[in-house]
Image 1 (tube, chains in turn red, green):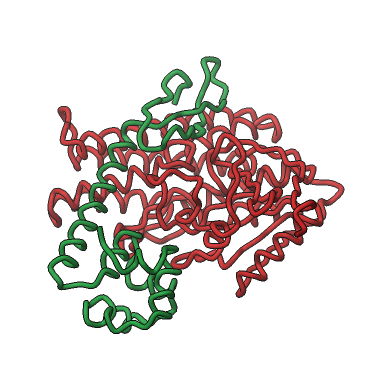
Image 2 (cartoon, each protein chain N blue to C red; image 1 turned 90 degrees about the horizontal axis):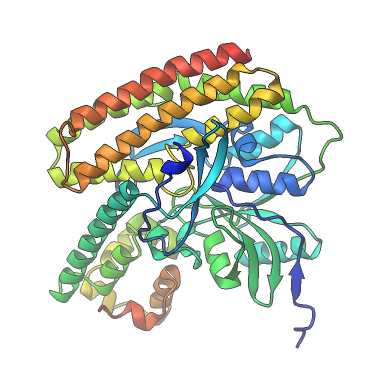
Length: 340
Length: 130
């Protein structure tokens, strides 16, 4: 039939990133001519956060996150850089796929929000019902879409049936076919201002929200929960909670230590751009705090493996978490002072 | 984390390399690829082992005639009743009925197809268990 013109390959520079959303943001903006790296996208978009909400369950485990809400990095970074965002959701999957083809035919790579579970190119061990994954579609060959998934080393292909299923994954944070791309890029972009505002937003979220489960207060709340786990549940249940905590902190997409290292890279990159050399020192401090988070994961893992060394118990893990909370509180207060 | 400390503990990621942000010898941030980290592998193994246990328990209930094959597939696809309802459009009350052997036997071919489509499998697979 008409299989002679069924290939579209748009020029798109695939760069691997740690976190899917900051990666897609940086890659899409760079394609549009804005010089953005993943750490800059993450920092300007205020991706870093912490919350622990045991009363909300995800897959049966209490919700603990090291980041702000999905979709926020792209929208917030675009807003601070003065770039309009074009985003659409769909009721009808047929229309959503046809629209995607239309954008590709018009020469525009687009970002998609998808459910990880239905993406065939991920190994089975990563296939959980997580509906806020992001990727870029930059072409189509026959019935396969050409995909730049920023968490992978290289671009991949995905059959259209699977992509359709992933775009219409159901459940919490259902993407409803969500498709997005940056609009017209303004002539002048005030990068230093955007960086400053991104940092200030992150700081105020971490220390100023008077709710016990958000920001550094949330870390203390988690510490108190960890202490209670061995008393109020069976040993296996408590270990599963620890395992889930490790996964949220370290699973693909955080860059290590629950985004703390990614934030450190951002501060280091921001220092010369803002002309505030002290930010480089702050980068060293958040890296050191990240190393404490890594120790939390290591100790938890030794407990999970039933191979504790002296001093490994829930009490000591809670102690490390409190140390993270205290140091992060001081850190974000100082950082706010530097950028105000 | 220092660049030389980047863990390379391949787990279940099947050769997938992830990106880590690390500090080089000069103190500058850079990136490095990692095939995995043992601490994370331990956590993943435990969580997958738990899922496997749920799956076995569901399978046992089906074999003993207390639940329908739908109950097994629901667990296999890591869903709960609310998610199955989202994927198929059936109400949770109906789903609970279809989770019983009698309720499942009464399903029309169209209804079976709705479940199969929800799980992205064939109707034959939906009606059987290993």
